[in-house]
Length: 192
Image (cartoon, rainbow, N blue to C red; front, side, top):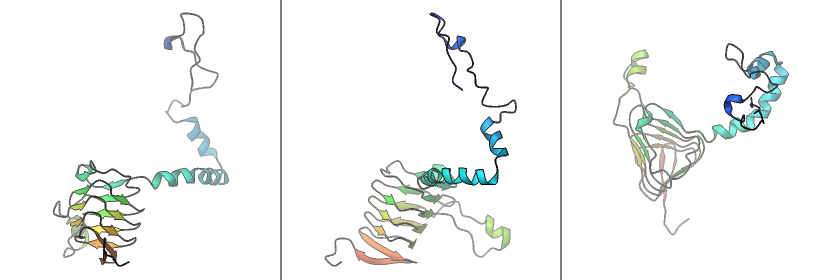
C-alpha cells in the first residue's frame, strides 16, 4: 500500500500520510489478500498461474547453492564464479572451493557417509563428524551432474566430465571421466 501525502505546505511528513483508497494488504490474522484470493482460485486458474511463474522459479532454482549440514564448513571466500545449483553436504567434513572454479548444473560435493556395517536406524545415525573433506582447487571445471565423494582433492585446472563420480583425489591438469572417474587425458598433452 502506498501512502498518499498531504500536499499542504509544511504538512508533507510521514506522520501526515493518509491511507489511499485501497484497504490494507493483510487481514486481522496477517494473511494477505493475495493469499485469500488464491484460496478461492480454480485448479485451472492455478495451473495458468503455475505456468506463468515456472520460468522464473526454474531460473531461480538453477542459481541456488544448496547446503546440507553446517554452513560454517563451507569455504567459498576465494570462489570467484557462480556455483550454480551446487549441492554441498558438510555432514562429515569441510568443503573448500578456490578461485576460478565453475560447475555445471546439478553437481554434488558430498562429505557425508553412513557406516554400512550397521543396520536400520543405527546405520542412519552412524555418520562420522569429520575426515571426509573436499577441496576443489583453483581453476577446476566440473561438468553437469558430477558427484564428488569425500575425502577428495580436485587438483588445479582439473576437468571432471559431465556425469562422472569422483572417489578420491584428481591430479592437477587432468581430465577425468566415468563412474568411477578415471584419468583420460593430461591437459597440455599434444594429443587430442
